[in-house]
Length: 216
Figure (cartoon, rainbow, N blue to C red):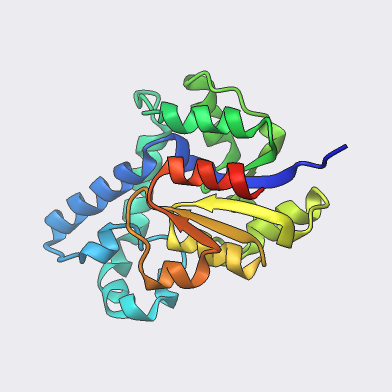
């Protein structure tokens, strides 16, 4: 009997277009307060622990007063019953395909009840027991807490975990967990920082699929 490898997927932006929602909110905030945000920032470096990024230290001080406002607006949008989530059907198809070969788990940066509501609304059937939220740990990515918690609760060795993410935070957290972090360039091309932390990096979903098919 062959034991399946563990594949962990960051659910939010892999299935739903939440990244674009937050990016648009930041653009509105920038316009309202006459802020100049760099392309690097708008391409996804605004997530948790931004203050630790030395390259963006000056920019973080600039945007720090607005982080809570952006998060509040974002939560209002995501929690709204009027929101019709945009689902990436090709990504969803890959999840169901990979489920035949891998032991799948999912990470979300939302509260568990939020992501469950979104899944119910979009009629996507995923095992709720396999979804873990970064809200359940002390430190969000790029710290490794969420992956180490998953490994501990499911008795998985971290160095056997394959983690698919589309952010620098994600591959940093994978690296710290001693897991195999795969970076998918959904929103940004892999820069040197990503290349330093990722186990492997890809420009398209088909490249990821081929890699998983041939390597694990």
